Each structure stands twice: as C-alpha cells, then as structure tokens.
Length: 169
Image 1 (cartoon, helix red, strand yellow):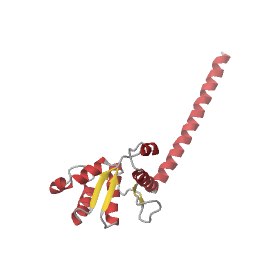
Image 2: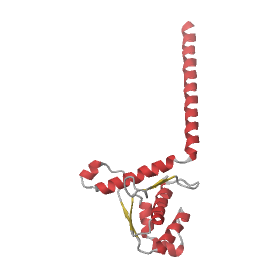
Image 3: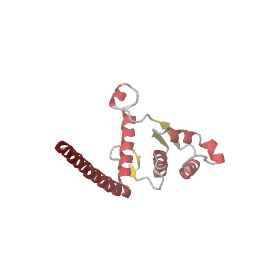
Image 4: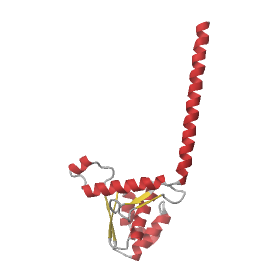
C-alpha cells in the first residue's frame, strides 16, 4: 500500500493499495509522490524516507533525456510528466525513517517530521490491508497453521506410543 499524509484526519490524506503485480517498497514510495503531485497543484515540499525516490527525483534532468534505465520505468515516466508539466513546483527532501520520540528529544528529527513520516507509514499500511489478496492469504495461513498443529499432535502421539511400546519390551 501507499500513503500520502497531509495532517491528522486531513481530507486529502491518501491510503490505497498499491496497484499492479509488482509490489515493492520502491513502487509504493514512488506512487505516493506521484499521487501527492497529482492531488495538489500548489507548490509542494514532499518529504520522503526513500533514498531511491529522492535520488531519482534530483537526477530527473539527466535520466529524462535518455529515459529511465532502472526498475519502475512506468512510474518514473509518469513522475517525469508531472515534473515537466510544472517545473520547480515540487521540492523533494529526505526525512529519516522509523525514528522515535527519543530521537526527537535528542534533536535528530523534528516532531513535525516524525509525525508526518509515521502518519504516511500508517496510511501505507492501511492501504496494504485493503488488498483483496490479503484475505485469501490470511485464510491459507490459518489453514496451514491448523494442519501443522494437527501434524504435530499426531507426531507426539506416535512418539508417545513408541515410548510405551519400548517400555513394555
């Protein structure tokens, strides 16, 4: 899933499952940036914890001339169109991921950035939970777990019966 966080309970927050067959964190991060740019036409300062997105965004002028040569070309092409449509409208900067309130107290990250990053992560997780495939995966996992328990009980029973048999000899 991917998430775009504007603020607590903000009506523009986005939480959606990641479309397509390729489900990677890089695609999710890139999709979030594209959706933020498509949702709000104002000047934006997008903060991401993705080095991949940050580096690609800042090297746009270089790779756009020759085409993106790495993974996720479809998304980089969309991002390139967004950038070319309004040059200079969007700034992307890096924020450290998964930091705690102790890190805020130590001055490693501001409370605003910590809250924003955590909010985006929660929205992305909620988006991932929206995938229909998850329901089937969870059911199959429960079935496998139940079968494993049944096998384990059977093996214990076999071992106990074997021990009784040897004790009788």
